[in-house]
Image (cartoon, rainbow over all chains, first blue to last red):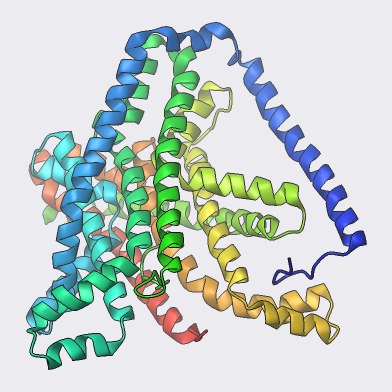
Length: 277
Length: 216
């Protein structure tokens, strides 16, 4: 297939890229071999290091960590989405004294690190770590959700709102019945992609001593001894990546499914201030 | 309020270290990310596969895990650092480079195929096609998301504060412990210094986006 950079390769180019592939493959394999041999020197692959996974308590702790991670993420997502919707409506309100303060608040929320917000809630409101994690995630992600939905509404043809107002709907009714359903459907992939970010950010709970997966790894390593740090960390990281990977795939699947439908399909709208995707 | 003024030297020191971490990691991430993107669009399958695997894994890894790996696991494996800033820079640049790679790749792919085909058909060499036709157009699509990635990098550098680096957030934790009666103002001060970087950068991104936007 012809790409932007190259024409369809002929026999000579195909030979060159095959040779390149073999050389590159050997180089990458060599690099991996080097990394693995360093790990082997540290005795990482000795069976007793990995025997910790025969202890049921280890799996119980890992399971608890996963539940803690997922429950914080789920609760935060469930609160942040409606809040983001409200913030979005306030941000695009026709009334200046609602629109402008909301804009400032959203800008401030997007400009601060999530971990700072968690820490703020933890210390200033003296909450439990769980509440601090959820509150930090909600504050940040509701601002992002608001911006994503706003981008979706602004990507709609102007006539949608004009037609709504012309048939006598109030401003709010037009937003609710005509614009929001289309905007949310259009922005679904971005919204799900933001869920991956939210899920990843639950690991910041480690810093505010919320006992999520990574904190459990630390606890286990402290308890079992430093020799077992790598195996436990490795498994926890693999679980984290597997969960995030599945949600990312879901986002891609929704995007593909959406673009197949002609009407109301998914569109790509750049959202200011959102680095992912 | 007074607590901010009394500890201003600490804030400034933290602010400068946050800037330092962001700038150094940003430069490494830009270099490494561009290389990854080049590998991703290269005709050599092995490089494409490597780049794709790296980007997929890193993008789905929480930053805290990357930091934990660099600052806690690596020293256990015999890789020790004189300063934890090095671990922070490794984690931040490894993490950010995956996002840079994605931005660059989608920028290159956003150039219509016909542009390059036309250039090749009038006899341009590969380097001419790349430098005169593709990169100038790709850059326009790449720069706004790139600035947003760098804003995220500044915010992400706060995680270093939890891994033994005294940057803004690290100082914030320390000052909050020392002045437990004025935690609110301590953290407002920290937030202010972050916003001092991120808000202007955000406006800059919007400005650039409006300046370079092209209708396709």
